[in-house]
Image (cartoon, rainbow, N blue to C red; front, side, top):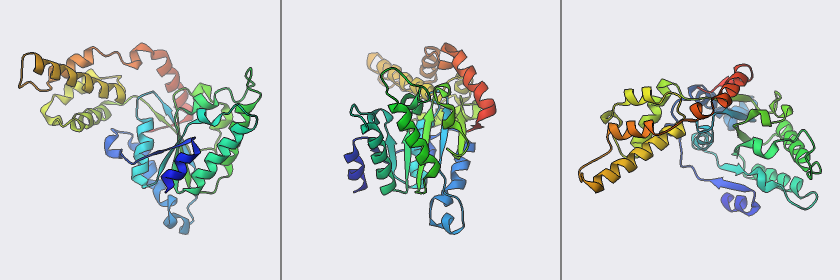
Length: 290
């Protein structure tokens, strides 16, 4: 019934609970923070006088698990996950954009407790602090409506916003009180890469202990979780092709994984300046997620 209500808005999208924190490699600090806030999201926390959690802003390198974390949180908290597409909010008729956002917010509150996920929030609110040609101030008004709701909301709607380019967001979006916390999700370290390799091999019905995980971890320094997943997929295609070509009993091997790694150029190598800027910003403005 809630799903039908959400779909009728045309702006919110309902996500079923398909991911869990077992699918997330690392991010221990963020997961621990979520675990401590769960009681405040139900009646037990209310009776204990705990303040209602508002939400988090996840900033970081693309492909490092920000969106996956939002989906996993839905399962961990057993709450519906609603994705708000800011692009769908904006309409051509005067006043329609603000009305669309208010309608989406009202729907989220009606089906609460829930998690409201805003992916790549900077794309929707970029330039909200300045007048853009042909904009007529619509972005600024929509942005103001959202900020006011975040500041004053009393309903159990937990916001998870993700961003890749923090410099595109207006400063007032990052002010204390909008979100409970801002987390930086960076490139995975050795222990996290170990977990990520094991997760993706197991997902594809392969025993992780049958492979040289230590070498894979060393060879994937600077790789994001999404890039490691892509390497596993590429290696599977290599193995499947070899099986059909000449080796009927052939399965995924360490060589397939190593060759897939060698053929992949991670974002950390192709755009190191972007990564360095994010790291410099996070040093003084965000908590580490892992």
